[in-house]
Image (cartoon, rainbow, N blue to C red; front, top):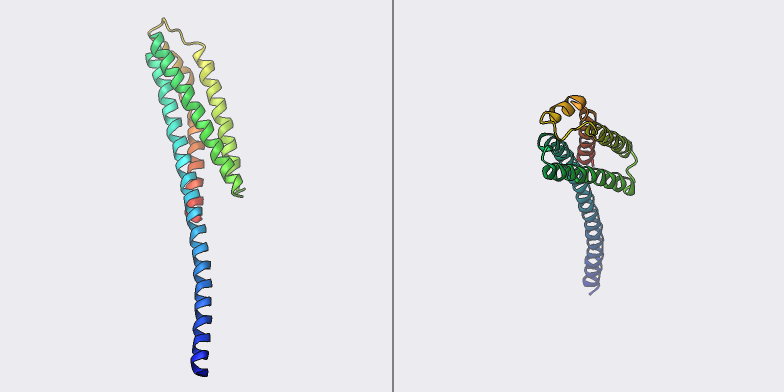
Amino acid sequence: MILLVLIGFIVGIFAMVSYNNMETSNAYVQQAIQKGVFFQKINDDTRQAQVNFQRQVQEWKDTLIRGNDPELYNQYFTNFQNREALVDQGLTKVSADLRDHGINNNIPDDIDTLLKEHAKLGAKYREALASYDRNDPEAGKKVDKLIRGIDRPTSQAMDKVSTEIKQLTEKE
């Protein structure tokens, strides 16, 4: 009888230790899943901002190419402005999410720099657009020559942030 009680006591202790280990493992796995989901979302949001930026540039080009038609000009320039806003919103969200999760490395600062660069680019686009004459069939080419390549610094900054986010995700 004593042996049976002793075996029951040992089995009970073993069950409690196993249960505790299982709960600890479950908590660790849940935390790892949440972390993985967070970093995947950050990656997705950053890539979406890149896509929106490329589409913004395309809408700019469409504005210049097809802008002699007032209706198309309004359509493409509105699309350009919408994409510009989506880029800013996406990058601002990524920066805030990183800071909210305690990630205070250089990435949020690089995103802030990118947002400033993006704002400068928007101002340069609008400044160049002031010389766009909708009655001149060559206006798109003329304006394009004024600003050729001005999107490259913003594009490079976007690539840098995306690469940093990818490396952070892989590390984490």
